[in-house]
Length: 274
Length: 268
Image (cartoon, rainbow over all chains, first blue to last red; front, side, top):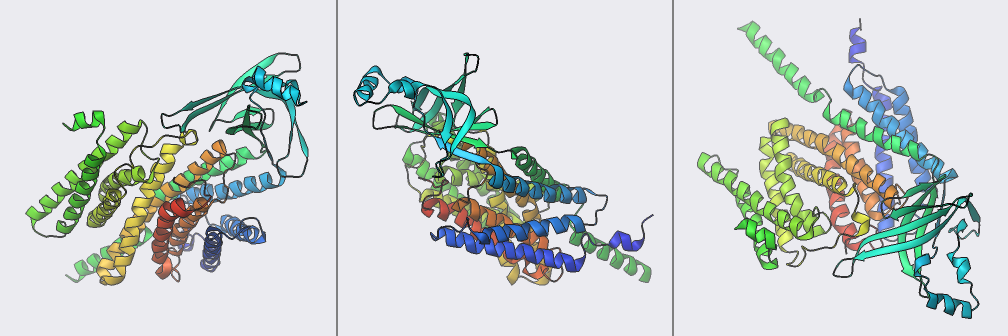
């Protein structure tokens, strides 16, 4: 049996709540200032210490609110935990990716676009077209560090299809990726925009296509390794589920309930007097 | 007749007249809906229904002519937004007893369709680029539409609530709360569906793009409202954040897209 004090105990200690809400206000104000600066063209707003500090304050406020929360047996309490823990997971996922993730771009040739004419012209210039048409197992890191990344598999772009609208705007891009297995067999996979493919630890994205100075197509690919992607995705799902629980399945507006109670008491008093 | 016109697609000038007709019908419905005379109220309702129908015809035309859900250009989004106001009002009316908010929903519809009218006659047809061909596209945009609709009306109520008597004020503040409570989860849904989509398309949940950060600030403003409202000493400042959220929403929707420089979300 709960005592009256336990029943009326606030979800979070009022003074602590005041501090946490003010922290939320400060985070919002700081992000607003940074957003205005970034929109005005100031460079590096999102790369420096200020954004780390703002996200840290946000993370600390969230963690404290989760620890200090006094749960009750209702949907609101569950929704509170689900949504707030979801944000914490998403932030941890993003932080771990920033520290240990790997991303790089590469522009391998579309092998089918290297025609005999292009091949002949390149050979005349002393460039081996056969090398370009071969399989790749390494890509250079695109951050300018010169680091070479070993992908752990052999691939090449065997073909690339482009569909256009009547006005010349792109309608559909599709790359055919070929993998050369250690036993000499070849696997093929279709890669389209919005539908990355997985190979080993890597996720491969189709970003763009272009024609280089020799006349053959170069396909812009992105290779990404994110060991905590599941954590970020889980965080997002929890945030969404928790937010909808809090906002849609909550009992009723507190103020509305209090107002109804007051009205009921007034009516009772009036009845007694009568 | 309408079906035939839809099959061939409304000509630019006809669509243009439909837009101004919808705007005028909405504004006439707004002007008449405050009347206490039952006949005028009924006329107002009819004007509103006809206005929504005319608006819906433009949406259907955009959909049929382009062959995809018309959410690609600003013109298409605003035209759809006009109809969204009616759908969202029906929900608020029956779930939150928000009948008194009807004029404010209609006012926004009128203003939006006036904007559509001034956007030009050839704004309807757009190609559908590969980056937008995603399962996230429609729910992402539609979630934002629902939330933008609710936040716009909530902000208007917040402004009006400064000028009404205490009894009306209580009604308005309850209305604002219900609107935000309904709109907030959709705004969060829109933002995180966008993040999942960005991860599928560009390999990043978040890239600190101008449009992304303005929408984040909008979500945070509503978060501040919902939290401040719970604390007695802060609750008097809470509704200011709804007004701010609406201002940020306008910046996110119009100004970043149009003048956002290298924003990946820029409308061409």
